[in-house]
Amino acid sequence: MDVGVLILRLVVGGLLFGHGTQKLFGWFGGGGLSGAAGMVGSLGFRPAPLFAVLNGLAEAGGGVLLALGLLTPLGAAGIIGVMLVASLTVHLKNGMWNQNGGMELPLTNLTAAAAVAWIGPGPYSLDAVLGLELAGTWWGLGALGLGVGTALIVLAIRRPPAEAEGNEDRRPAA
Image (cartoon, rainbow, N blue to C red; front, side):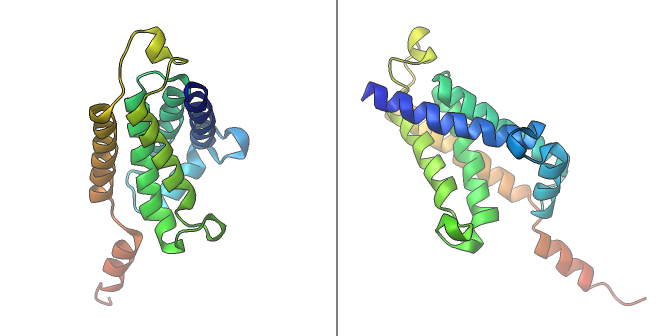
């Protein structure tokens, strides 16, 4: 099981690190901050440049923490939050399956991060090297609660594009 958790952490964390750096730095064929700001702005997140940075940091930072097994519940919480927001704002309208742009992949990432927070990063982690015992039900629930809570706050302050467009259409003619 120890090697299995290590593999899960390295793959999911590494891929999310790459996904976040696409937004932050344009690495791996990403659009960088300007592309990410355009994307999050189109989803109703304002100010778009700030939300682009926060999105990239949650993905890249959460990915690094998960991959290293360092402060694992915190890294998992970042991944849980950003993947929940992505699922609900980008992918929900496309259904479940990834082939249609659906929620399959972000929900898989969210679930993997939550599972690692719950069972712990294992002995091949920086948490273990540092003597941090951040595993078990309470740590898993804490990561889940922090991730979902953060996602709900972000979603609550979002101004959906349809709402903004609807308000513009109701203006009286000049």
